[in-house]
Each structure stands twice: as structure tokens, then as C-alpha cells.
Image 1 (cartoon, one colour):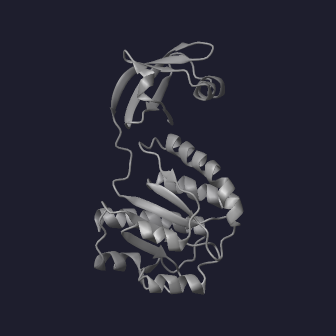
Image 2 (cartoon, helix red, strand yellow):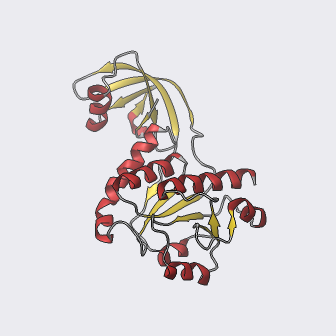
Image 3 (cartoon, helix red, strand yellow):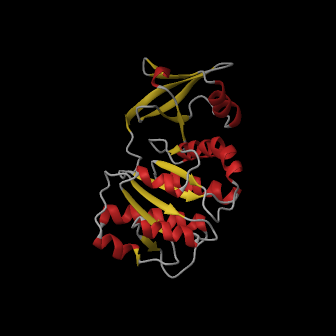
Length: 243
């Protein structure tokens, strides 16, 4: 069951009163929720509310709170993804999967072989933020990832303490070998970098080498970029928690 985002100001006397017109339309008009149905809410303090719809008016509705608790549906790793922007559908999928996997932030990258022009990327950021927000609701996640403005490799590496580049060509090791020899601290800001469908350029590989960034392979198979993102993030999450 998806949950809906509210502010703690909506809560009074063990009830949730929703007067936000967009949320009202979605719950009452689109989903056609009826009195007696269960509805989940999450506030800005990451408190989950299990409620029952008790009253519907022309522009608001009210739910009785049956249970509330601190949500634990969030990743305990300070993980970010910087990903070369893909064409429309693949980019939407990449944002959805990164959000579902719990990353704290998504950084759209403009790389040499990027499939989308930089000017177009800048106009898409707000739409991608909405996609991330909808994904948060669908997977009942407790926190909301930040979708950053478009960046470059030169800029993005300045803000992170641990960086892992996933690239099939010129890879130095597989991830399991890498994590055995390199301790990853989950409390530090960890950045995973994923390239475009066409791969990184020779100039970018030279950049990685200059800055001593590890180049990691996901195995013998060649993945589409959005699949590579999912595989890379999953590998890091499992590796950090169980490595």
C-alpha cells in the first residue's frame, strides 16, 4: 500500500485532516477511497501513521489514527548515485530504481557520450524530482532523496569521501575483490558513478586514473545503463552491510 506525505501540522486529537487539494483529489477522486478504508501517511519527521478514513467533505477529508511509529524504511548507508543521463524512459526507470534502493541523492551527470543535451537535462530536473517523490510514496520509503541539478565529473567528485566508478572497460577488479581490500564506511558519503550507454570516453578514463578512482566491473555481462545502475547499487548495499 502506498503512503501519502503530510505535515505534522495536519495531525490533531489523534486524527489526520487533509485539506491539500492535490492530495484530496488523488485520494478521494482518483483512488475513490471510501469511509472505513485504511490509508497510510508519513510526515516530515519520518513518522508513519496507519489510519482509517472517517469523514469526506467537498474539499477535505479526515482519518482516525490507529497506530503511529517511527518508520525504518530507509537505507542505513550514506549512498549517492551520479549517473550519466539516459534517454527518457530509461532515465525515468533509473530514478525510480535508485529511489527504491534508498539512495540519499541522485546526481544527473553530463558526460562526453551523454545521450541527452545539457540544455535539455536542465529542463528535466523538476520532472525527475516528481518521479523520485512518487517512487517514495509507492515503496513507503521514510526519507526523500534529493535530485540535484546537472553536474560534471570534475564537480561531483569534490563532495564525496568514497567514490566507486562502475565501468566494464579498463576495470581494475570486480566489486567483491574490491570490497575485500577496501573498507567502505557507511557513515561517510559514498558516491557510485555510472556512465552512459556508450561508455566513458578516453578523456574520462584518464580523469579517473588521474584522481585514483577505482574502476569496478559488474561481471562478464554487458548491461544497459539503467540495469547497471540497479546492479551496482545493489552490490554496494549488500557489500557494505555484509562485507
